[in-house]
Length: 123
Picture 1: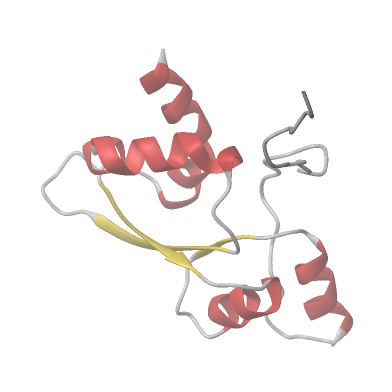
Picture 2: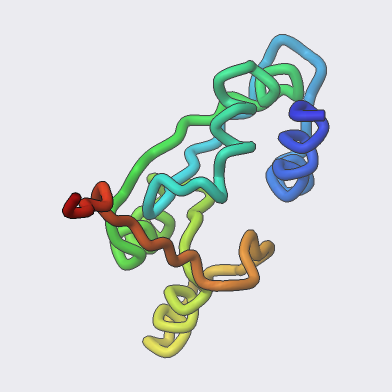
């Protein structure tokens, strides 16, 4: 079940870059703006070698800030960026000759969480 879920989550990567059964791996530089539980299937696929099984050599980069991920994409240091869609809107509004194409959305809602310390009671 986990493997199936991981493979389903990487379909956009496979469609974008294709896959090869030969010994040659297609290198992909993947930039993410944050480590997130939403990307857990991707981390599992990386650790268990599922990308390599599909002919992909994925290099994961953590780049703090959507603007910096966009710079990495525009300067060809990254092939795919996991960022909000607003970053490509900013690039387009600046009149870029090389627009960024959004091809997938991983989440439909904001990812918010609340944490707290241990609850203390007076006895």
